[in-house]
Length: 279
Image 1 (tube, rainbow, N blue to C red):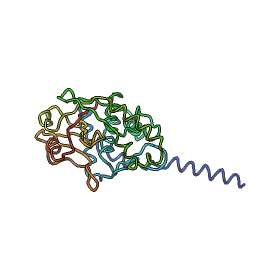
Image 2 (image 1 turned 60 degrees about the vertical axis):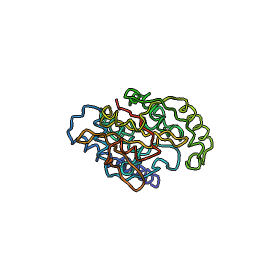
Image 3 (image 1 turned 90 degrees about the vertical axis):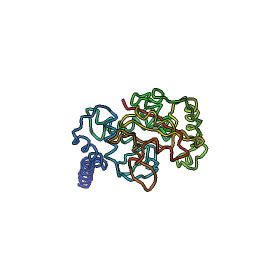
Image 4 (image 1 turned 30 degrees about the vertical axis):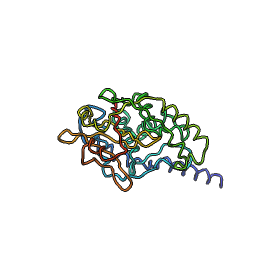
């Protein structure tokens, strides 16, 4: 009798867990519903991307949401975003909306694909920590195209070492020395690549070539770092390009009041931009 009770109780728990909805399902559906019910006829992936970004306007900025305890795993967060997770969330939604499968599972698959090197989670270093590496990997996967050179970009290289020279700033690097060695190898590989960027004083000149929903990566003069900030290009009613982003702690996802070109001029550490276009 006791064994029968235990068996019934076990089956009941398994059944309840199977019926328990994913805690992220409702949050995911809020934005998906907004996209579908808009009934807009999107002509490009960028137009979808820009629309998705607007559904997140007002979402609070929270840093380090991916730095969680335990082994590296896919983190979902629709209610708190930093600049990179905002961009990744928009891109993952765009890929999901374009596919036949518009489920949360499809979104998870797309998010993992763009967030990790080769789309595979294999411990902390497999995440694309440096955004220049994110660019390289996602262009290689055919998700985006780096159009910077074609619109007047100039060559640039990124001598990267910030993560491995500041391991105290990263919990996983502090706890696992082997991760530092792995990151050193990735930094060395990235540092050998040549990228292209638009110097910030020339962004206004090439603005006409930047489209709604293009991904914008802001280069920096901070030693050891490649990209200081990322977001999406959006156009106002006059056709001017503005910057939609998750700025800093205490703020929310927003669109700059000034144009992207003027926004860049306000920060001495910003040197220019790299422009990616979703395929």
